[in-house]
Image (cartoon, rainbow, N blue to C red; front, side):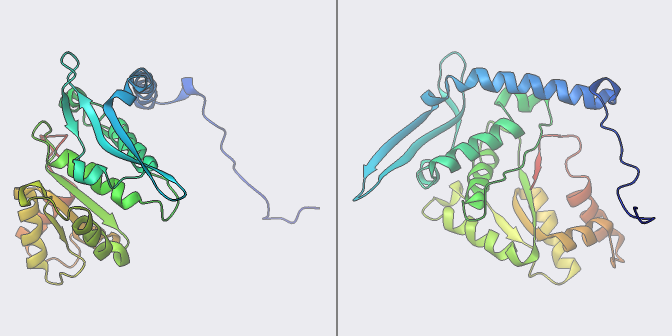
Length: 252
């Protein structure tokens, strides 16, 4: 006999689609329509990439030399593409990953003008270069003059914050100064006033900010912050950034 208090209890039934809230139904419908548009575009996708193969001693190494994320529908001129110095460093699965992030989060330049976008989970196994894919994606969208994105916030485990900084420096090496993203981290910044100054500058000038989970939570909630001005800066930067402009910021 089963002992009391053991076993699975109060298992909720799976809600059927017709019982879901209207917002959820609308979201499912939008996602289905987005998938159809992406599938239609998939047939033309090979034309937006250029790949060469280098003969190695044992392997053929495909190198992508061009990745266009969006083009003019009439002239077919590229409107948004990954910088050549970066795209040539991407392996085929990483090229697909950058395309995947664009399709999920933005889809097209036109779409970003009338929608706040969506999100995605990049679930490659450890060691397959997810950070490089994110660097490539952010570099492309934040420096494009055809998009309104200005800032991106990377919230990560504390022990990886400096690695994120190093990755941005590594993959932007060799680019001109005006082709590089401004990147800063708060993991090593101890004083609240200096954190506030850096967050304010990030919001004003754009770029990428990196911080740990716990710091994000503490600053967003205003813990141990007595200054009202600092609380306002933390709230504006981390809790309610760019509300009038829904496409202004990315959170990773």
